[in-house]
Image: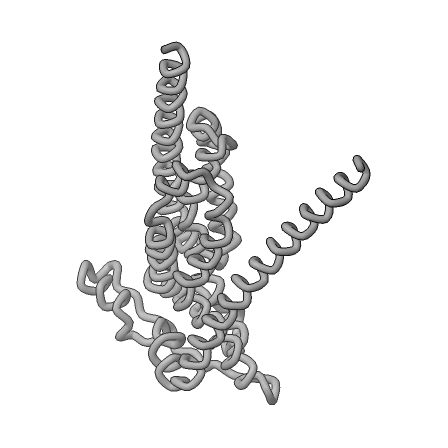
Length: 278
């Protein structure tokens, strides 16, 4: 009888684990469908996507260049005039598909994160679920701010530096693949890095992160932020500093969030202790 009970319990655990994987598969599938749907819409609007969005930072009429020139003549930047070439026969088609997928992911990010949140939400306590109300909206806003920051602030400086950099008499004629890869690197990773306050909130909520730790290793975090900014941005100091400042500001915000979570946890413990004594 004991062996049968053990077998039954193990089968139930295995079944629940398989159900868990099935739910995860469905969430991933729905997320991919959303990305593909938005990607198809982007794919069908090829001229607008490439001429206005992707190649936008190459134009002197790009909002960032006009804003800097409006601030001061010394800050006025002009993007270099360079040609973008393709070396492979199918490069334009493959880049078109690749760009459509990544832009589709950026547009569908709120829904993708919503599916991710639906998967992990049942594993949280009711109080944690209540405290995380609106997390999908906050994460979507932070991601969008990061993407727009990379597109409007980092990309123009990176294109101006890299496009005008020359060695000897070499003419800069980047490939379409390299240009799109840089634009992708300057937007999506920046948007994900801007989720730092949410990560700090979640780790603090489950007890893996404390504000004292963040304050103690503030200098180490600054070095890591500079390294991350150097990896994401091209090798010019201006773009690296432009990304490092908001990342460090997000780190300071993460300290405040972690401290608030710690105070809430202490208040809950004190309230629980007083109830047990009474």
